[in-house]
Length: 101
Image 1 (tube, helix red, strand yellow):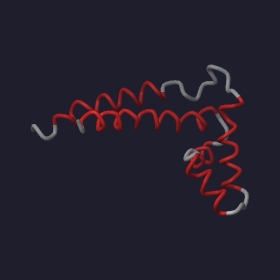
Image 2: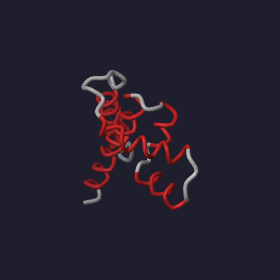
Image 3: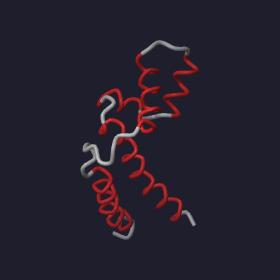
Image 4: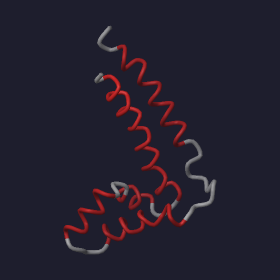
């Protein structure tokens, strides 16, 4: 039981973190800004149009959100969902970073 207690505490925190970040995410509140879609549009174009492999790999690494943007399109959900997922993963990263000390 002692081995599993961090996960028993961390799981509800992660689920709450994911809920807070994804609640009403598909609504256009606040306005859907152009700078929010700029990188996603470039990453989406890199996936769709043939380019040199170095350029394509750069955008896939720089904007790992290109796949979700391709699945959901340039909608508020498609652009904001990857950020919400990364924000939830940061909770785990911070936990393991602090736990390493």
